[in-house]
Image (cartoon, rainbow, N blue to C red):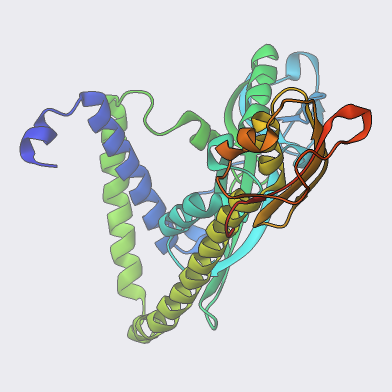
Length: 332
């Protein structure tokens, strides 16, 4: 992008870039912070739902009824509504984990990316093997729409759509559903961002200063192992993708239902097939037709190489002409 295109950019688009950059910055800084220093949201009232019923509960899990029901808070989904997977990946930044999952979601789950909302959370890391445990939560979009409708009908405004009760650890599908490119930037948000970035920069400098030089050397030495593991993982993924493409290509060439449909469209009215055999190369048809129908000529739209295995003028039951043809379709 050149300077002219940057100056011509719409304000809302530029605001979306700033929000994306701000969220990315927060995620990167949070990964550098020790776990005990990271921000943890205090538990509050939640709305639990499994789409069949909805319950309002306080921070201790007690049910709330009547006037005690909250008007907003976190919505907690029943485990039956989403898919949760734990996978082992090379140790990497959260942003890189999201990119990997975004590219490989159809391989890691039985869903297509455009049909679901998802969220990831990095768990424990194995410094010896250079790997980490990642939790992947997947929520079908049609289920999410039904949950939103149920919450709206109940007059409950959700500020989170969680796959668990722990506010700091649970997966949250709501940011993906809302998108980071919605809304406008307000002045107080800008000042809060400036203050947050200033405080986080100070915290990062303090954390980096207190880290020992041996820790930095160990991290540098471990990069070679991490890169090698990531390359091997990438290689296995490429092999799987190649095999999948070859399998789909072979299926498209040798699918018996496709050949059956082609023969059905090519046969003229008054011709019946009694036996159809397909070995992936040759198509063998045995049947009968009304007098005067040239079945071989009709099938030439499929292939010009047709061999007749029955003498001309063979009569089948009912006075119809019998045919026994082999269509040479070629190699699969």
